[in-house]
Length: 366
Ligand code: SF4
Image (cartoon, rainbow, N blue to C red; front, side, top):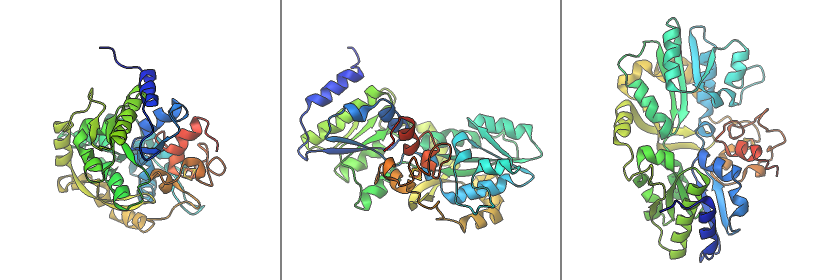
């Protein structure tokens, strides 16, 4: 049997009637989904009764400002190197003019900040600099957390490697939206990469507890259209359920080995989401056994000062509303004016997974 092309899936969607509600607002929870949807121009070719809403799919965008303040302060200590994934270097925080407002600004003042592309690079960095403490500042969802767990469960790590963990679980943000009664969407395509680790079943609550059509979807235009077709079919049948539209990579339970490793290395904890607030059971923290590598416990004075700045957001920044799908990027009053990729005000204009950056890069100007 030949695999349907993106054009085939588009034709199948167009051949379906409008859902009984007249329209369908479908949220995605993944920067990769949003990038494909936007860059492939799917919004322009789908029936006008389908609205595709970018949701909380960017881990850099939800990394709390206090963790950035702490990373900036650590980078300015003589015996510390802060290593982090590239996007994070540019994420601004709200600091007085005389203070660095990002890791990039800290570097310009002599701060030790090294962008990395993988956990393996951080390990090599720590081995190259035995006289420094190398703090890996890591934000990410489960797909990033699993390799972090693999790294920090190794027995051969150098003593000078520490972790500033800002990792988050994906599903609690959707649960938060659904529980507070202002979800703003009628169906969900769930993130295929996260589901390869955590399993499709993690998303069943959306259909069964909240009655919304749900499908796990992959990342190419064709796979996303397949996921959209699945939720539209459910809406037409008025029978919400969980469909796995990415069975090539996703099974019901995910990757048990990766999940065991994550559970053994990190605890699940309440965590602050930038601009959104603290969500129960939404973050990862180093276990007691990793206390000697936990930057939060090894630099208590730095984190006490950083936590005191919790909630400080750049003036006019609507990133939290964008992340929660309550406004579209151009509805932020700063979009394209005060906030552009070369002078971002908020993280959503920095990260490759941020909706503002994605929309701007694809030419959306208003
Ligand atoms: Fe945040 Fe800038 Fe997007 Fe506004 S335009 S939501 S400030 S990133």
